[in-house]
Image (cartoon, rainbow, N blue to C red; front, side, top):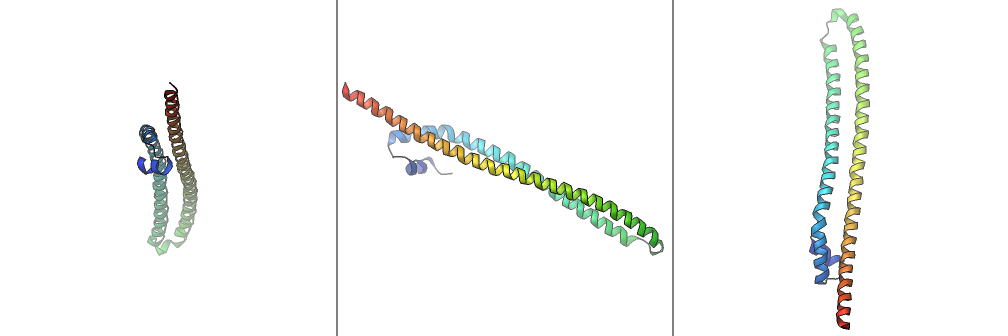
Length: 159
């Protein structure tokens, strides 16, 4: 994040009085904004990370189920071909059901992951807007302070 001095030099007229007023606002609000933004990002990112772990676990389970089915088929004895064929057909059906459920769960988790990513992206836009508003507030405050000083100077000049 840019320093206050960099921001001020780029966006303000350079008067010390305005700079002091803006610095006070910057010091007061920038930490709060940063804390809010950081906590929001961390919360959403932890949800995304958890979903990624769930997706990886489901992929591993799906692979394990497939591997177990293959191992069972090769371990069968030749003399029970008919029995094994029936068991294999039944096992294959069950694995397809499990795989379909796992695939549906994976798709659901991916949708949740996408939704959370959208939320994270939306939070980024909100943060940018808040920072823009804070910047405008700092500019307005500086102008108010300048106007106040000018008014005081004019009143002092009349007396």
